[in-house]
Image (tube, rainbow, N blue to C red; front, side, top):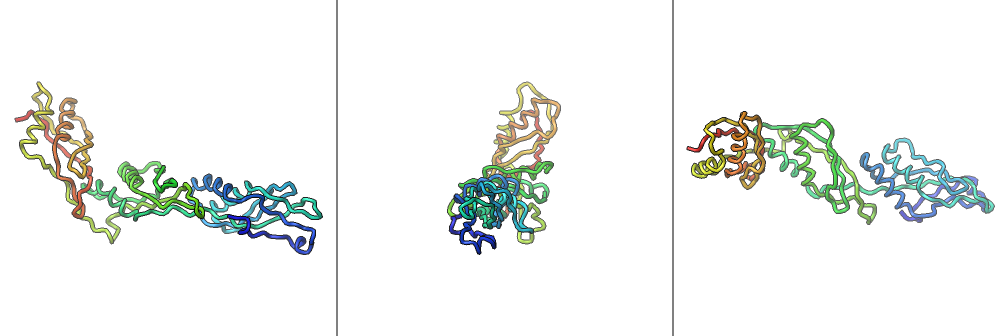
Length: 302
């Protein structure tokens, strides 16, 4: 914001007094605006223009900064912060410094905007949670967007369900933005991204999900059992696992749901699942990563 673009308010007495020179800015406002933007934008998005009225004393210091009633609370606070930080040349009457007021607009950066629809990231990241049942919910996700348009940080609310936490993390990793800008200067900025996981209530979304299945043939399954079953054991147990199968058809994450009571058999089951090949889950015809419960019988290889 250049000095020439500022609107200065001259008091009525100054308008009739040729020996009165009104207060004015001593420097450009951008550094103060960006400093205050960094402080208040973390609390919540700050964008737009706010008009401030500044009382400047005879020493050139701002003694009061106000914004019109009805100004957004965060925008008003950030604009008042900038008004206090700015430096001024005091008004003069008969060459003696005096108190004066001026009005000026304070413009803040634009908000970051997603390069691609957020819906596509949600659909991608929600896929693992629609294999067994349709988990739904909504979340406002604050994200910090860097000058390169990538998500640098995000904040998860306390108490959200584990599946939503993981899905939100996935979405944050998928998002990319056109960064915030103050005229031609790109700046880091916080913004809030609404995430709507209510797929069944979205009429535009018609999802056909096909669960994954084992691709390994009997010989490959037997080889996995021979490789993984502990030597010297004779017992067997049906054990429940939760596995994440990649789009390439591999169980790259295997979690034990409840121990069989025999740690060796528990570990054998994990080894077996990691050595099997799967046909990946498909969503609307496309392979997707999926997470689901997968029980297996761990027993001596026949």
